[in-house]
Length: 608
Image (cartoon, rainbow, N blue to C red):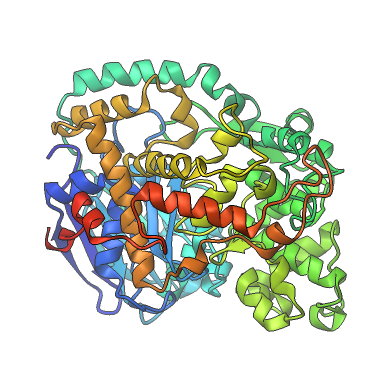
């Protein structure tokens, strides 16, 4: 089938050996690529009960059939493993030139198993595999590592994925950096890479795949590029996702001080408009992207520091920790990127610790004299370094908020803001009821990226402040839409630029692969991929009790903003969760019946 190489590269770090695993056309068609194909491979290569930081947990890099075409935003790859934070499926996406190079190596996916005997650099050059000593790279930042690897290999065409000190020390929310600081950030996959004694991966290749109908595809690529520069993406092109700060604050959906409030007194200082006017250096484009949503900001005072900035980092290291100093937030984001840490889980875990401090659960005896108060920018920056070094209290916080509650107790699990162990994104669930359901049922934990449930809340289709049984269908369809986007792989910010996402995606797939794909086929693939994620979680300990939200959501109503007094009861969430299971065709306790497996072809997919 065109658009694919038809094989995965399987590498065992313990022995240094590798082999090629055929990927039949049937598998490619059913799972497409990206997160979909990665989920299939994870189910195959990760045994039930595997230790997420053990050698049996595979680390999987996956490309897509659209990568390498002229279609805007499609230079993306997925990384998957069993998450060290949740013990369930962990997946993350990154946009970069590394995605193009991955495809040119001759592999549709790379599956890395085992553990190297010493810190190592994995080099994959046109399908040739070698493992090199990398002890001299230990302790280096992500940018330092990438630069030195390229220098030592003597060719800037190599693309590098690496971990920083956080990944080396198995911080459970460590990220994987690539292409000058872009991050595969969520679910702690940098810790999985560190657990394998793998400091960096360098890729170079020249193997192209054939496009079935390049003329039609290129004509469509031109039309899509023009649409990507229209009104549907204007917000992202002008202010980026930083625009969310002011809007969310106005709507009462901006999580503040560890979700104790939904508005922030310092929102104006962190608003995208203010940062754009005072600290913008340039717009940043991902590889093969026409939108340019990323904004590179630079500090205005003190030593110059720059960082790519988007809403989730602004929220997590800003309002969530009560910090309203733009320079401090820029420094915090830059530090996370250099150390190789997810800004969202880092900020949320520190915000939890700050509330513990204010409640007397954590004291100066625990922090080594540091006063870990909301709004203290220096404490925030110090805490990030301590986490990456696993120094003092940082060693506990490096485990993530769910595990940290067991260490400190004091009822602190009541304000640990995570789902399934993954810390919450910057969407207040009490004032966004569809999003509340999306967060509760997401296979990878509290996630705003594996569905766009919030789209319904920000529309006139539903009352965002009230719960009802119609939300289950909305969330299920949103997840299936996202699964197809994450498998083809399109950027989420392109989603409203399509005239008809499903028909255009099916046609693009056919032009690339030469295989007919209908809208119904593609929608079934989305459902199959999400069900496969569920099957992975079931085999690794998921229970019905996992599809819930933090206690604070049920026990406290919002105290500020236009949604003041609004809450969410456990009964309301349970009602919506049941409606979601019905929409999926699952049982009352959230399991997948045999007839659903048969309908999706998941009863025999191990035989393909």
